[in-house]
Length: 402
Ligand SMILES: *Cc1c(COP(=O)(O)O)cnc(C)c1O
Image 1: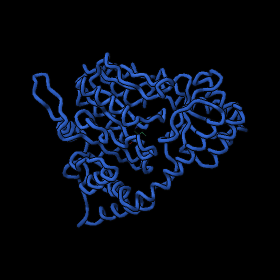
Image 2 (image 1 turned 90 degrees about the vertical axis):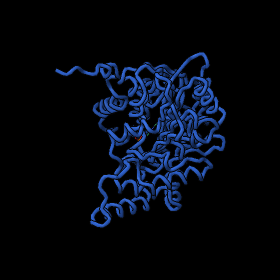
Image 3 (image 1 turned 45 degrees about the horizontal axis):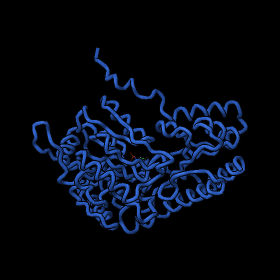
Image 4 (image 1 turned 180 degrees about the horizontal axis):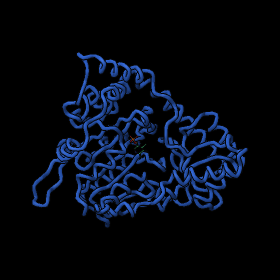
């Protein structure tokens, strides 16, 4: 009988969204007449369709696959077609950050890379993760039995964790703009993390999945826009939220070409090379039609078209934020992020507020406690819903809480 990787038994039994679905189902069973009145503001998935030029590019790619002369089999490198890597490199250049096409690797999404990157690092590393956090960072490290320590995000620091020079870490996960809190690091805040990482000889794994939602000038769109990052950071990004690719699947990871770690015998090992070796063994690349669609996102036409959807979500976020301003409720996010992270009113706990909002307003959100201990007492609303439903939900919340 094979021995189980018993680290899996240490993971949370029920995924947060399964618990939420159970509660909603129980509510509907007890109140069948309220079923159609429920508004879901907990979803972390986009709802608007793909941009027209993306659909055209995917179709064209598929058609090429149906003709002998233009058929594509395995991609030579498995790291993505040059046309897409060049388009992404130009996208970085458009906001003033230099990333070479050869430093970019195309993947089937940011979640895979965030989870798989741990493969190339030893199990004795101390992994620092912000609390609250997107669950993948914690789970993928616990699965391999690594020690995880937490950096606190609190109301006091605006849910932007600050490095503690007295605590050592080898790997640091940062996500900005953040899921779940919507908070985003300023250049100065991110520089403090970069300085800390360099001092600790640590590597930052930077999740930039929400960079397209940034509106403020002093919030960098890439960690590589900040001095020193090329010495200590890997950036993982995705088209999921930027361009509605959650069902199409495409992301990219940027590893500076000279980023190194020291092996136990003192030799310097190139990170990009080792990650390439890992991917070469376990990953065969992203489908050609999807890469065609992804390249279309970065064309002038594509950027205009995705802006329409991004503006729609951003306006929803402004509507939610403005209601919370009127109610005098503390929150982070909404400005550079589709997420609004609010303090539960009347001193309620996260799940208590979840039940209250579901029962009294038939509005569903996500309890902050599901993202870590510092999430207790907080609650996440998302702007990925319908405009009309967002306005309706916000009206109900205002009526309930004012
Ligand atoms: C949605 C999301 C991603 C994107 O994951 P994909 O696998 O590319 O769909 C990555 N990181 C965070 C924090 C997210 O919320």
